[in-house]
Amino acid sequence: MPVEKFTAREAVRRSVQKKATGMDRKQVAEQTEIARGWERQAGRVIDEPGRLDSLRHAEWKHTEWRRIGYVMAEEHMGAYDPQADPKAAQWERERLQRIAAQEAAAAPPAVGTDVRRYRVVAQRVDDAHPGAATLTNFTYAQSVEAAVAAVRRENERPGGLYGVRGLYRVVQVAEEGAVTGGAGPELTEAGQ
Image (cartoon, rainbow, N blue to C red; front, side, top):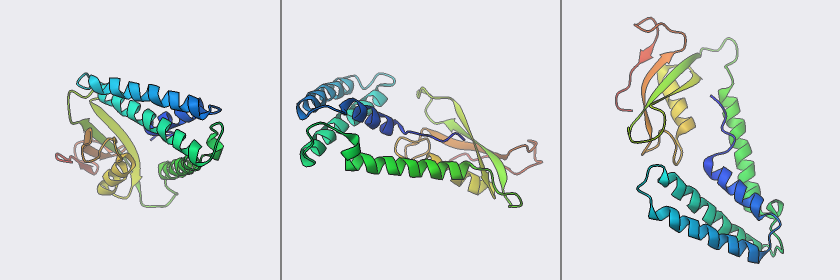
């Protein structure tokens, strides 16, 4: 499974921070007002397909511009510098830790351990959602249940695939390479 280098929110924050670099407080305040306008505009037409994501991105952008203005005032910055922004530095450390953990989890198991590679198939819950009808994830685990738990843990987060209001539900788990029809451990989950 590919390692996600940036979440959508991290990408929005990073783009705002990059744009704000070198700006003074007045310029940041102007950009904050522009972002607020975009947020309002995105909220007006929320019933169109894909507009909820646009609204979420507009909210994140507006929030980050406001936060940068606050940080500049608190840290007495004449011009914004992400290196002097304590929260931006904390987020970057957390992002790098998450990537390291994902890469460690994605690594194949050590030789001689009792784990198998599983294919976990999830189906879209809402046909109106513009995403793929099915998603397939691969993971190494000691059992079918552990494979489902590993894939969910990796994808459960706000706006993730399997959260409380997830976009997908797991419908099939099979040992990779197993012949379908009973030769390998296979589980079909209806309600998860």
